[in-house]
Image 1 (cartoon, rainbow, N blue to C red):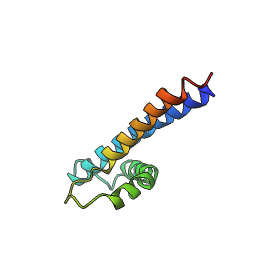
Image 2: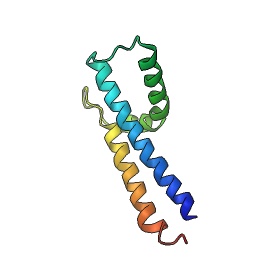
Image 3: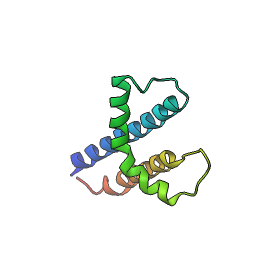
Length: 96
């Protein structure tokens, strides 16, 4: 059981990194730092969008419009940290 919880914690941490990478890439695309016509950039962009968008979309639908600022990645990362703390503090001591 403990090994399964460790795998879940690692998966949540990797997903946090993917959310951060998606946010940074969106800023780079918005400021024309990277060329979206590049096949590599386009494939990375599509991958990150396909992985993170299903989790970010419900948060964006609940959040009010803040102009051009999207804080849904921050909220999702805070939610992931909360879930990780719940697992470590409440489920890990029980699992032998």
